[in-house]
Amino acid sequence: MSQTKIPSKVASPKASFKSNEFIVYPAHGVGQIVAIEEQEVAGFKLELYVISFAKDKMTLKVPTPKVASVGMRKLAEADVVRKALDTLMGRARIKRTMWSRRAQEYEAKINSGDLVAIAEVVRDLYRSDVQPEQSYSERQLYEAALDRMAREIAAVQKIGDPESLKLIEGQLSKGPRRLAKGEEAAVVEETDVDEAA
Image (cartoon, rainbow, N blue to C red):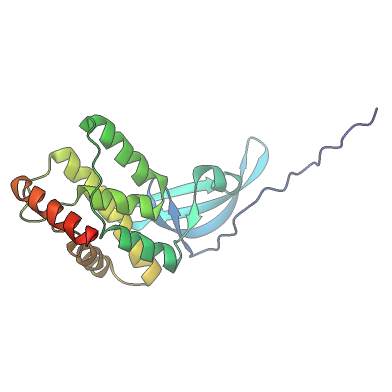
């Protein structure tokens, strides 16, 4: 009977992040690795990424083996940013379910760290000037998603947050006309006729 030898150190698929690199941590958004340090915890040496979230004035230490399980990733590639920006121009998809359920779904999308999913939340919760006001909780989720998206796009394109917000708002304004409830039906019918033609 042969026994399989278990390697003393299992090689983990470690994403190689470097010091000063910007990353996305799903629960907090864009952060910057300020150091990679070693600490001894319960007799074991542990390598940690020290991540600074300047806007939130927060520092987080993530053990390198936990990077994959927490969903930490590099900034989005240019094609993902383009897809996210294109998503903003689509028609809002709002399910006819209770707000509490939709709010949970939006929260999950924001915390997924997926830029396109975050763009969907921004698109779905966006209100133009002629639309009715958002509720407080809608506004909170919208601003959280908008902030996450703007920070990542700013980091990817090496621009400031204000320029990133203008870019996002410009894309949102190119979407289907968003009007007050009474006017919406006419626009939908016009759109359907245009698509059929």
